[in-house]
Amino acid sequence: MRFLCALLFTLVFCGLAWADDPLPELRIEKIAEDVYLHTSYQHVDGHGLVDANGLVVLDGQDAYIIDTPWSRQDTAALVAWLQERNYEVKASVSTHFHDDRTAGIGYLNSISVPTYASEQTNALLKQHDKALATKTFGNESLWLVESKIEVFYPGAGHSVDNLVVWLPEQRILNGGCLVRAGETSTLGNTSDAVIADWAASAERLQRRYPDAQVVIPGHGAMGDRSLLEHTRKLAEAATKAE
Image 1 (cartoon, rainbow, N blue to C red):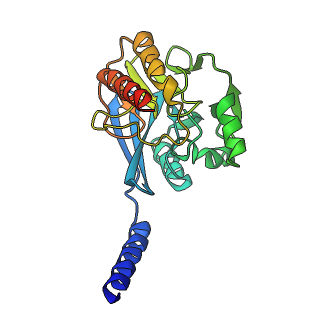
Image 2 (image 1 turned 120 degrees about the vertical axis):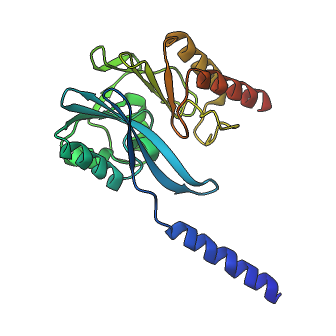
């Protein structure tokens, strides 16, 4: 009995210590001309420390944030990093309603940066009592910057509202959480997923962006177009297992 009590105390203590562990600092790295990858971190129950990818795309001295970092603090740090380099943050767009894409919307709103999200995403944010984007659009393709930043809805998958972002000049496809990293063997968090539609949505991306050279998943290492086929196969397997 004493052993069981001691073991329980140890597990609870270790859990509390893990929850209090400091998070790694926001990481920002250049991956192409005028494109930076930002990576933020959170402790997630059942998954440990998880990273989240987003982009900054530059157009001259104008900066566009593709998915906010995973916290208000890291979003403020990203904005400060850009301002220190004399870039003006012109807008952000979030690719679905989860916090790893939208946690910084409230901060960006507070400093009068236009925040974009689809009508579906804003409705889900409102449903979950989260800060809303100030600009919305339907399921049609949206050019955030003409000929430079395209936002596209391929269909449901990780969530009903998941979007992707295409950078034609750099041939970079930001797949968000619809796209799984090559090192993953599952679909990850499926709490809001539409698994039956996921494979078709991935295949739609394969057809629409045959020229993509770099594909960035929502979590994990970036890769090439093979990540789309990897995602499609994972989704097909998950559909058959349902």
